[in-house]
Amino acid sequence: MNAEEIRSFDISVPDGVLTDLKNRLAMTRLPDQIPGTGWDYGTNRDYLEELIEYWKDEFDWRAQEE
Image 1 (cartoon, rainbow, N blue to C red):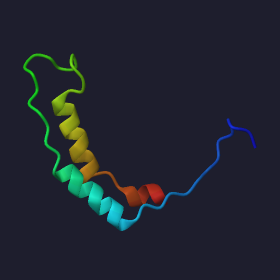
Image 2 (cartoon, one colour):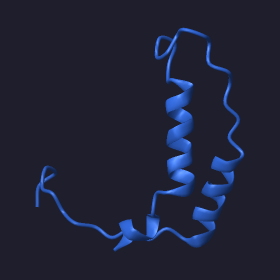
Image 3 (cartoon, rainbow, N blue to C red):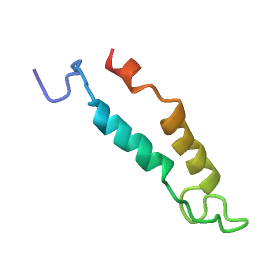
Image 4 (cartoon, one colour):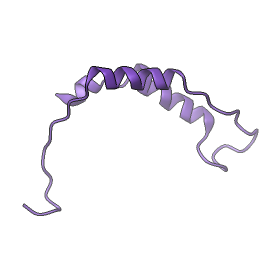
């Protein structure tokens, strides 16, 4: 087996870890977007907000474990 070989692996995330993640995502506070800057000074706030909502409400960790 070499370092470049692709190998399958199993992942198992404890319920407590997922609960903690969901709670942290729910409590995320984002700064206001500087008007007219979009991605000029880092991540776009609207995009990040959508991403947080996806991870909190839509992403299925258990499906990834199968």
